[in-house]
Image 1 (tube, rainbow, N blue to C red):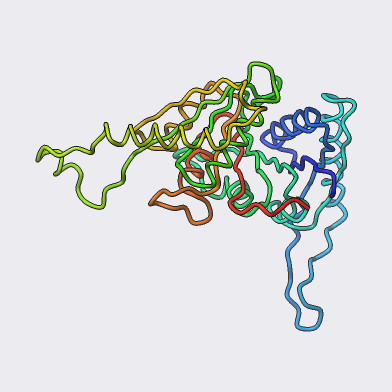
Image 2: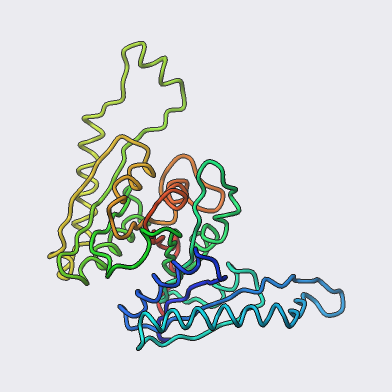
Length: 303
């Protein structure tokens, strides 16, 4: 079995620098090597005779990539002198380069500028593609001061919805919290019910969703999930459950404002699904101000 590693994409931007420092701290905490990847994103040309071929990069482009890698490795070593760092110069686009160099045992890390009302969806395309397609957990680190590592994650927020994906997310959150003293997990579940008809007219007629019943079922579901995943290691972890009728992504992000880490599954049971990634996970990735770990939808077995 290959040694697990933390792999992070860099491009010289402040956003990537925040992801690099977070990834280096995680690699050092886990005792894993850190692979720093710079993607040249050279175009792929289809040829009748030679098949798909990538253009060789101009020398100045290659040198720029090497400078970014050398600087990134220096920052990582400066923060963690004993850390093993490998520099990788890749020809592919960033998402492909990171996916091709990851294994199920690894942790992928990428920076994100987030979306917000005035940003294009392209800003988050790499993080969304990775989270939707990777076979290992993907950490998306916002390029803000809140993302700077200040020690191992102690307070972790995890979103659950009763699905197998969220069960694995809950197990991951508990396992991470069990690695530190006084680790805690906030389990968030929203029972918001999307209605296929005009809820406003129903409310005017005196009808309202059965909140008490939904709350009871939410309580039972979360308790059952915790019973399934809690083991000897995680019994010492402090667990708090937050149930809400708000939008699921909004509930998770709000609970995670003061957390060190948010954990979600790649796709849940929501009725509205994203093109590549579950709508709740996309909403969390685009608005969270702390690092978010997305668990893979269909993890491959460990080699």
